[in-house]
Image (cartoon, rainbow, N blue to C red):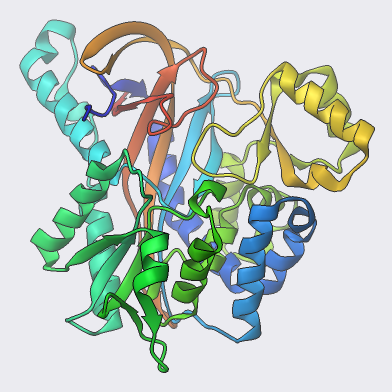
Length: 427
C-alpha cells in the first residue's frame, strides 16, 4: 500500500490556455458521439490497421458484428479526457490524445487540487502564491453525476452499475472514490468485476437485459479492457462481446472506444474531415487550433523528414495506458526497418509532431520522499456526454488532471510509474 505520487506545489499554467481547454471539451464530446455513429467511417479508417494489429482487429470485428445485428445504442455515455501539452516554441496548447475508455484519476485529481489549495492557505504568503489561483476541480462529482443520470435513464431503480476492473489493480482508490460518490450522493450501488468474472457470472436475457451474478446491470463502466494484456484468454473477449450485445449502457460502447484510437485522431486532423461531423465553423476552428501535426506512415515526405530529424516526432501504436510510444533514434530505427521490410506493418502506427513544453524545477513526492527535479507537465481536461436518442442530457467539461513528469522521461502515465499527480496555478 503506497500513496499516489504527487507534486508538492501546483504548476503554473496560462489562464487563456486553460479557458481554451475547457471551451473545447464539450465540442470534443460532441465530435466523439458523431464519429461513433458513422460505422462506415470507423471501419474504413481502421481497415489497414486491422490487417497488422491483432488487438485492434478484434475490437473492429466486434464493432462490425454490432453493425451486422443492427445494435443501436439509444443511451450513450462518454466519460472522456483530452490531454494537452503547451508547446513552448509556438505557445500553442496542442492535443496529445483523447481518451474515450477508462479515463483515470477523476477521484485523485480533485484531492491533489484540494491539497495544493490547503497548503497555499497555510504557506502561500511565505512563497508569494494565492490559493484562489488554483481552479476548482469537480471531476469526481461530475463523473458520478453522469453515471447516476445514465442509471436514471435506464430506468430500473434495482439495477446496478458494473465497474469492469483489472485483476491486479494498483489504482483502485481512484475508482473507489468515484463509486463512493455515486453511492453517497445518488444512492447508486456499484459492483466490481474482472472480465473473467463477468464471463463466468454474466448472462443476457432474451430481451437484452444483462445479468451479472443474477443482478441486473444498468451501466457498464470500463476501467479495464483497453489493452491486449486485459484479454489473456477467449473468456475475456466473450465477456466484452456479451456486454456489448446487451441493453446496458456502455461507458464506452465499442464505437466510442474505436473513436478514441490514435488512427482516428490522425484521420480527424486531415483537411476538411471535421466538417464531415460538425457544422459550426467556430467550433471546428477551435478544435483545429489544438491539433498537433499528425500523419499516417504512408506519407513518404513526412517519413523522409522523420528519418532525418527523429527528435521532432513521436511514433505511436494503437495502444492506451502509457509506456507504448517510440521516441528519438528509435523512431529512425523503426521507420528504416519498416521501409526495408516493405510490409503493411506501418499501418499499426501513426506519426505525431513532438511537443516541447517548458521545463520547470519542481518537487515530486513519491513513496514518502520528496525529490527536486526538472519537470514538464501535461493537462488533461475531463468531459462528460450523455444522450438518450435525440436528447442530449449532459455535455460539459468536468474538471481536470495535471500530470507532471521528470523532463528526461518520455512517457506520462502516473499508474504506469512515469509521472506524479499535480494541479494548476493560473497566471
